[in-house]
Image (cartoon, rainbow, N blue to C red):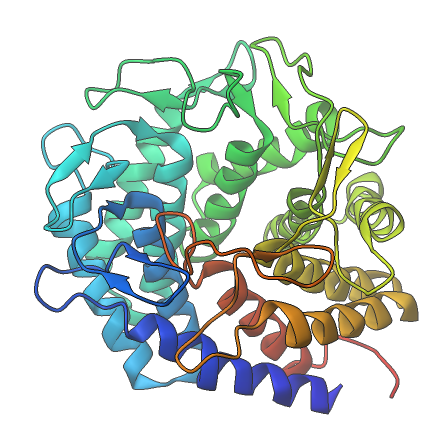
Length: 395
C-alpha cells in the first residue's frame, strides 16, 4: 500500500494540481471556464457556479492535507471570487453561471449549487479559521433549509433569483423530476462538512434526516441500487442505475454516519451493501467501472469521475469489512486510471472519458462540470486514509 500511496501523491502534486493552477484567472478573478481537448484555454468562456465552489473546496482540502502554500493561495483567490461575484448580495444564494468577467449570466438558484458552496466554504474555514467564510456557509444553510418541504420530507431543488420555486430543469435529467438523488446526496455531503465545524442541533437533525431519507426512500433494499429520480411523492420515475453516484454515495453516507457518531447496524450495512453491489454489477474485466445502466442497456464508457469515486468507495468498504477484494479492486482500478484515464500529454490532466477500446473522447478537459474536485479528492482521501492507517490491507 505504501507504493500505492506514493503514486497517488505524485499524481496529485505533479500532474493534477499543476494543471488546475494554470486555470487561475488573474485578470478577472476565479478560474478560466474552459480548456478544450487540445488543452487550449478559452479565457472568454463562461464560469460555472458549481465548478467555482469545487475549485475552492479542492484547493482548501489540498492545503489541509499537504500544507503546500500554493494551494492555500489559490483557495484565497477562489474564496474572494465567490464572495465578490458568485454570491448574490441582493437576494442571497449563489448564481448558476457567470460570464468570464464575473457578471451574472444565469441567475438560477439551485440547491445543488448552494450545497457545493456550503461544502467549499466549510472546508475553507477548516484551513483558515476565517469566520466570514463560516458565517456565509451558515447563511447558505438557512437558504437550503427554506427549500426543505417537511410534508414531503424532501428538498425542492430549483428556484429563480428571487427564490421562487420553478421546474427542476438543471438536474432533472430532462424529466423535470422535482426530487433527485444527486441533489440530496450533495446536500448530505455539504452538511457533513459543515457539521464538523459547526455542530448546530438543527444541522445535526437535518443531516440525520438525510441519512434516513437515503435508507427509507432512495436505497432499494432488494436490488442494493439507489433510485435516481422521483416525482413529488417519492415515486421512482426512472430505472437508471448510476454506478458512479452509487459508489460515491456509499462512502459519503459513511462519512455522515461517522460525523454523527452513528453506528446503527442497518445504516452501516447499507453502506457496505452498496459497495458490494457496485463491485458485482459494474466492475469490468479490465478493472474499470462502467458508467451506468438505463432501460436495461449498460453504458460501457469509462468516465473519469466514476473511476475516481470508486477507488474511495472501495477503500472505505475495505476499512468497514476487511475484505481483501476491495483493496484489490481499488488497486486494479488505479492501474486502469494510470494507463487509460490519465492524459500523458505535456500539460494534460485526465480525459473526460474513454471508450471500451481505450480511446479518449475528444471532450473538454475543463468546463463548468469538470474540475479538480473528483480526482483531487480521490487522491486526498487515499493519502489521508493510508497515512492514518485506516486501511488494514496486507501487502
